[in-house]
Structures are given as C-alpha cells and as structure tokens.
Length: 133
Image (cartoon, rainbow, N blue to C red):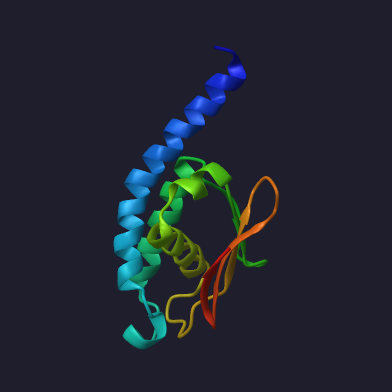
C-alpha cells in the first residue's frame, strides 16, 4: 500500500469515527437547539460551551479544517460532511454558528459551511433558518 492510499484510508477511518462519535452528540444537541429564539430568548453559557465542545471534537479529527467567525465561514472536509446524516449536518452548522455567537445574544449568528477543497457552499444557517445544498 502506498503512502497516498494509507492517508486516504486513515482519513476515511477518522471520518467514520467522527460521524459516529460526533454525529450522535451533535444530533442530540441539535434537537435541543431546534429554534433558538423561541425556546431560549438568549444564548446560555451552557449552550455556548456545548457548541464549543462539539467544534473542538470536529477539529480534533480534522473534519473542520478552519472556521472564521469574522467572515462567518467554516471549512469542512468533504469526506467528513458526506458521512454525516441530515440531523448531524444541521447540528454541525448550528454548533459553528453558536460558537461564534456571544453568550446572551438573542439571535443566532449566521454561518456558511464550505467544502475545504472546492469552496462550494454546503450549508447555511442564519436569521431566516437553515439550508443545506
């Protein structure tokens, strides 16, 4: 097996592990954040800490390669994105947006999720809701 195959195989194993470990937690967390503005008038410190933990776990397996709160953009590996189900994709997008929000903020920050290889828009969350491409 050459080095390229080893890297691709290693990435796939990490992506699957990330989907299992992170996906379950993100889906559960996402369910509690269904409608931030109606269930909770402001972002709590616990919600912010939970979002930061989710993002940290995604970064630890190299699924999220970078995110920029000032630009409201996050870059994710396409293999990792494809391993997530719909609820987990929504949860990841919300987690990245909440991480960039301030505790006590009354509405979610907007966030665009981009493919880190092509730059293609994968998902968006903002004042008008969530969409996935």
